[in-house]
Image (cartoon, rainbow, N blue to C red; front, top):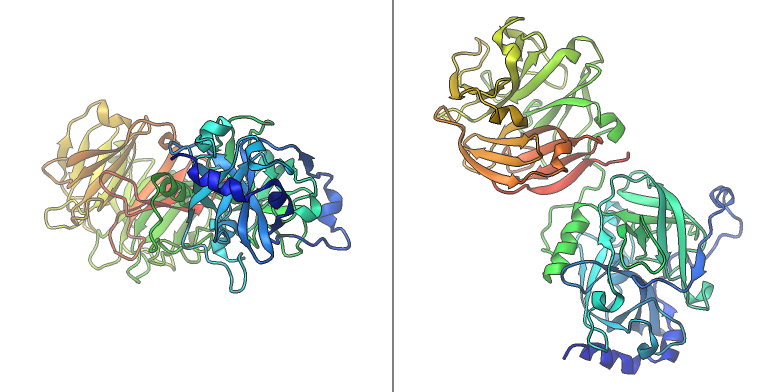
Length: 565
């Protein structure tokens, strides 16, 4: 019957046992004898208060010295209506019977708690979160994954978690690391909080350099606050709000000096979103998730720099058989980012310094237009000239061959992209003209552009194709096309050939998010060698890779450049 587990737990968890419970997580138990400069400069100190309905704490019976008062959790709004957010390093220690108590009141028995108690049924942790030996936390890149979710049973009165508390926090991926005011609510340990109250603090946040984590400075966040939600629109006892991370991450959410006034939090991204989806579906995450890279292997520079990435092309430019990324910047500079075959990138190679000539490049694409395995770079300039760089590489762009003269009809080529569009699997060039027509040029090479075949006549429909790129999204080694339309919709066209633009499939309907995609290219950036890894540069400079994108769905998302950096 609903609530049976909670009723059984309530017979054990007397008011005295909860009051006597001690913290299992020892995060930041000690304070330094002298305040640091950061502490002296910050006047923020957490305020102890009665708590809020969407945040609570955990109790367990498996501590080394009896019952434990353990970490902080918060209610997440989901269709399952029974999901609690906390930190992975907290959840890993929940080995026995644990309960979650929203808005905990010290001295009150379970039936006197405002919303009852909720028995933990199942815990969901990213299997790639692996603590350091002899510790429950880590300082490695995997600390970015210090997020966990728990499914709970109904309370002792048979109510689901969300029904009992009357709402839940909205899981939200932050737009960046810098926020003017984020409120962090948690339950400090007994040693520093004999009244058993919650603490709250509203402060600005920054990035923990080198990690996908938030940082704040506020006093009073001792052991017990691990898992605390970081809420952007907090109001006391509200039934809603947006949570962008949880206290945890590097060293369990605290710095190396073990001070209570500096705290870190995992910033929610694709990994946390995936984990939440598994929790809602009540399915354990698979053990063979792709290795987590953290920010290592990402593209150099922050979002401010990558907002100036005007054009991108993909191809095998270094001779190591891995897909590489070539970027043309708004200042006319050109850089090469060698791929490592695992979705990451090595040290940047400068092919052209900032210059006036390359500010006139209007569309570029990479493909094997010349003999050999190495990709070439095709460029259409603002005056209608088209040139080919047959074999650019780490040492430079190499020689340039003119394929169309200035003033040519190619001035009307709004976009083009290379792909395996030929019947023999060779590289062809698909062109979208300014009038909405589509053409295929199957014999582009050092000798010229060759004759073209008109696939679609001029028309309004394709004038709304904002971005396009060729790739192998169907897994057939035939050339496919991905299009981002002006309304944000995404479509793929499988098996593009001289016979037509291929079979369309809808990947995303019209939406505001993909309207913000500014540059995209598809390449073989991962080990399987297929050109199905989609790189997208967004309007805010964030740059992401969708690995193994298909004809009907985007692939797994990896952040190459984080927003707000």
